[in-house]
Image (cartoon, rainbow, N blue to C red; front, top):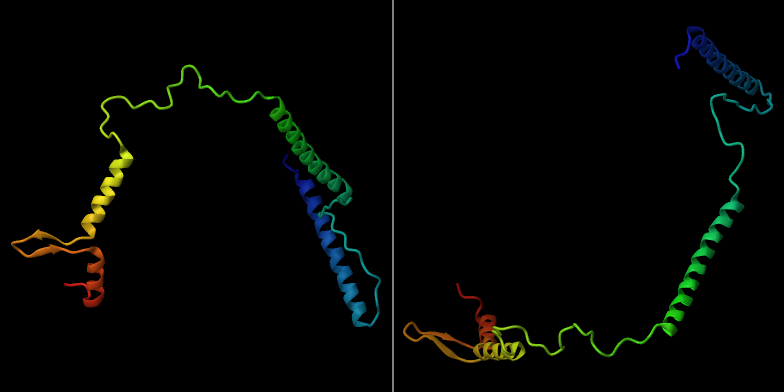
Length: 163
């Protein structure tokens, strides 16, 4: 809502009066201090500063905090009782499978490419270990030989890596 010209003038005049009165009070206090007089303490009032007239009621905050804490403990206790009740009254799990579930030892559908994956893996590991732990020719004509990996590491440690 726009202020009128006279309303703005009155507001500005009130502000100047407040500033002038606080300046006069300050200068009066300074001059009395210079003269050695002790002036009574001046309460500064600023009409444009607002504050809460009542403090926070701490007992209400504490009551709310303990209420929340109590509700948490009560719900935890209620859940504990519910689970105890459920353990006692829920029937035991079925020992037979559901009628439409596939048999437990069912083989995968055809074509079965790998009959025994575990045995195949063990065979692969033993083959690789045999290759890494024996001497063999890679190329007889050029004189390239495969040596066990342990011996190769010893040679590299002694001689260094060849260029």
